[in-house]
Length: 134
Image (cartoon, rainbow, N blue to C red):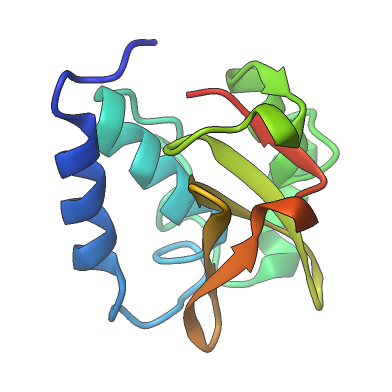
């Protein structure tokens, strides 16, 4: 998987287009936000076949388990090479703690953009428990 030469501009445009969309599992959640960022930067759609297939965290996680993965972070790990969070650079994917578990987000320097039910948020990269190279 290779990033487009203009991946930074594509990522900015993608994030701006997603920032105000309402949070909805299966349509606009943390995993789909991260997968959309990967698609914007590389053209590879890691969420093909997942969008619109679930409407709750419980159902989404059940589908991921049915596909043979422990959770959405393990699914991400099956598609992207894992790196130590301290090695993550802009555009990589990170798993950060949120009240209901781990959220996938997009690394932006010392912060990670994450999508939560209350909207887009930034979390310190130092809080990341796992990271994945894009």
